[in-house]
Image (cartoon, rainbow, N blue to C red):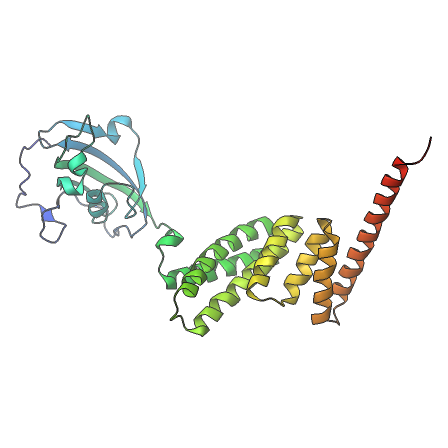
Length: 301
């Protein structure tokens, strides 16, 4: 390292379609059969950074600490995202990054001056596929991600792994809810697509509410069931489970209202009738306990 010119040599490849923004010179080939990292991959590299004068300003090797980052999401300078995406594991290369692909007109004082072209010697140690942030997914990716998480969460629920199921279902809900809000904001969304996402979202909320009831997370179960009822006002399972949650929260009148509505929708359900009877009995017992407590305050000694 240490050349003073930014001009490329015959061995250098322009990675920026002829604009001269990032040049690459391979100094060691990667492992045979290795593949280049995909967008959002988690990559691990060793590197050394130099000014064109040859002055070193940073080195992961000197710290004996490989550097890890997520590719293509802006965690590093643009030149690095472009450069590392061209590598295979085990490969080492020298990259020359023009200032606008590095730290630009601001530089990074005191080590990197303004408008500085930089050179990096980079070794790609390894990479693993990364998971895109939901905000960065396309609508079809959001749907696929949500449905996959719903499937894995439902399997965990059936296996009795309620905490793990809740985590998977929460991820499904985040993805599907984001997609549904986008669909509602777009007037041209076909009704069948909106119905597909709404149906999947309802099933996720119902499944996570079942986990929350099993884990005695009454407030969370109340909220999950309410989200279902925001989408489908007369959903019998949501009314039933919210009634059960509200009974445990000692919100007895609201619980009885939910369970009465569920009974009306499904009058043959023994579970709903029993839950309503339990809510009423708990309400009566609570009122009796209150009367005894307050009545005792006014008794003469």
